[in-house]
Length: 124
Image (cartoon, rainbow, N blue to C red; front, side, top):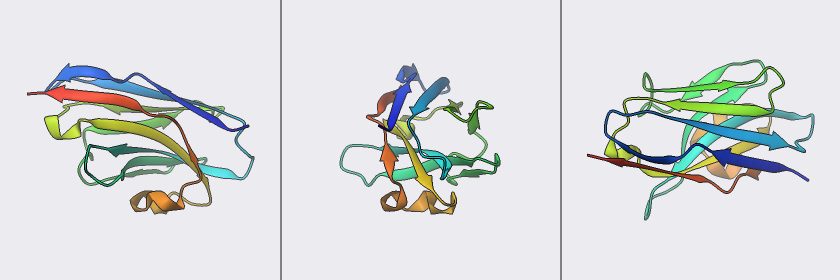
């Protein structure tokens, strides 16, 4: 049974930082990519960052230079370091995984496995 469990969300002031974690278990060996998505109330779910088993990294333009995705050597835990947070970064953040490449960061429908999410709230 696949499980993706996020943690690390919280409330911070603008300019602050949070480190999100995603612990994965039960993923098939064919899983090549893990990523982070976010969804604010009334908005579409959007891709934030993704990392391949080969450690290639992909970022949404809105977070480049502020967010960093990384993974443990065993690729079972993925992290999202969020720095210089802005109020518009407030959302539920979801961990996701898929077989195949990471270039589908822009289409959440291409991702197979999802966690329950962790809330990030940034106040001005």
